[in-house]
Image (cartoon, rainbow, N blue to C red):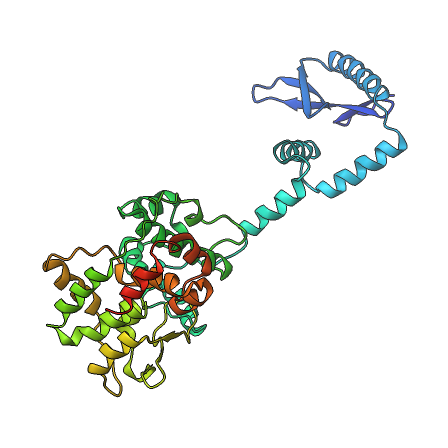
Length: 391
């Protein structure tokens, strides 16, 4: 009786190991037999006749069975393997283990924490043009009642000129550093840096930059500032200034506010007569510097009242917004040497010497006691203070 034809592929088994034989007819009419098996991937070998292929398949199946028997998993190992495969899904178990080991090598025992922090950096955020972010920041500060016209806006005009064409989240530390380096004076550069760091932190908090990431602005370098030297003038120099400015009576009140009351340049320029109460020898700073008390009260000494009374009006600005600059120009042109910001610096120094009250002077000047202690103590004597407040 004739044997039925063989049905391919033919399986050759040895225990649980299986090797298959495939019959393939090539384009030139020849018949080949392919033996295929798995060992870390698909393997195969071709033979010209079936018998040779079968013998090889039997040997390979026995070999595979032998290898399997020496690597039999325990029940616990098998359970762990099955669960690991389930957790990995379609991912290669070996690749997953390699990635985990590499991550642990890079982060020590903080792998999960590092992963969480990285996840925070790639959360969705709004990629907006720089002018849009600046506008949003200014609006938020103004809505919060923070006056920024003379602070942030000065920086932001220059910042917008440099980066207005860029997306805000595309700005890099190197670009910001190059921009900051254009400011030659260390203090000016640090002031601009401080403001853009605040801007970048606000942007991160409000969805314009990735969360929980060090901002590009924070990585810029802070300039080293020279020691802060307080420049003051003595009573004789002050008297020369008064005599010179008497020829320009519309500036006398501004000079009195700067030298006898210690108002800052911007505060002098923003002062309104309605907030000057000569009957009580007291004034309220109309436009206090951002970050200081908004209802700061300053005593008016007798000599300040004398000069202010001569030019008193019911209400309106005490002076124009360049008065202090004009006063300095007039005096310097006349040969009077005036260090930068010497009017306010002199007031604080002489006031501390006159009263011995650092805390009280700090309230009047809108400074912190720490700044007073650091820069103004023991610069002048009580006798020199008496001369100053009698000019």
